[in-house]
Image 1 (tube, rainbow, N blue to C red):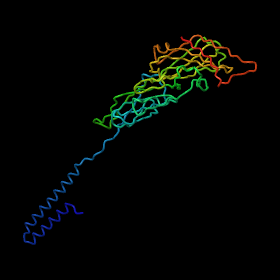
Image 2: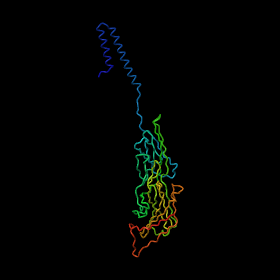
Image 3: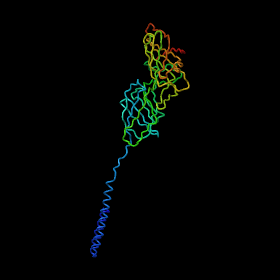
Image 4: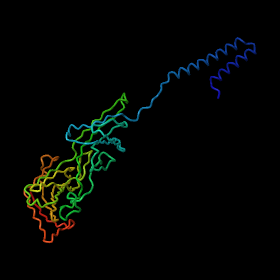
Length: 344
């Protein structure tokens, strides 16, 4: 293909040749020189333009961000790793980042505005649902049975007073949330940004002591459950579920006169019904089984610190096991429940 420059040179040559044949040599040479000068100027302009053209580098679609987890308000946190979900304020799927270092790390995050939730990622019990939005991000646990804490199965009749769903106790959760996280390009989009996420205890503890228990030496296994609890927790909003749930948990006996319980819970249900029932389950050495119910609403609802609820029961008389001469022991499936509802 003939370029514009080549055409101009060719034209100028032809003009020069034609004027010579017509006897106008001087005039033809002048025209040719002018044409050649024009071509030279065009080439110089083209070359000059190329020299001045700047090389364009496209902007990065992501920011380099150092995520730090501030555990100053959670000195007791012992976690193996952390994770964070960045929810775009304009909507869209959250971006999850996992950190093997509990202190944090550096990641690349698309530019934009976010709301963030974070928690430890080493939990063996707590599950997550509602990850499609910041408001619906919910922690929960699997279904359970009242007798799971005593290595048995089922729900003894009458032990769960309101027929509430029974769910497993969570393990300790440490985490938090942060809104108005803005990642803007600014003057230097290559600069390292920093996001500091607060880490706080997100589960509560329940401690139970049963003192002066008679005939405790005949008990081979003991467990407990507490009703009126929240079976889940919304990490973004900090809200508890309005569904009342019962949580079973293991208990320890000193074999003499004292029973102790320590467990984690999400918190108290947000339901208008504030009754809390504690149930103790005993399996005796002869295979017989008994459960006792206590109304502990006052101790739970009026606890000075809802993050650390303490329940104390003083005096409980357990029956002595009866074993017939043939050594008959009832099977675990034959729950011979003895129910005593005591109000503290």
